[in-house]
Image 1 (cartoon, rainbow, N blue to C red):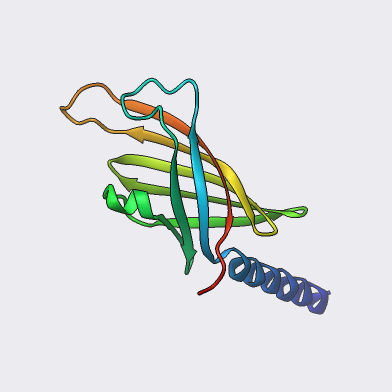
Image 2: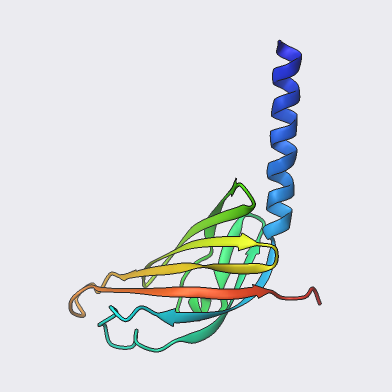
Length: 135
């Protein structure tokens, strides 16, 4: 019984390690705003590059806006790999992503902590793109 349990743990561990290696890389994506976005500056789409490396997620646009890399949670559900991460900076950006092959899709939910600069902002964007070729 103990041997079967140890083998099961080994198989699961190897699967998670493979999963982590599979998601690592950079993804060229397009963010499309929700039609429900009302905060100023959240009504236009934009290109971005999402990078997942060493268990952390960051994006080129978010980094320029002062957001720090966020810890990734990666899990396998059937043939899909689900990735979630929260980046903190000017508020919080929560990424809920799904990877199938080299295609990445999902959404960004952004909540801004305005401090004393006015009301809180909330915006959502859909994300679609694919893994960039290794350089």
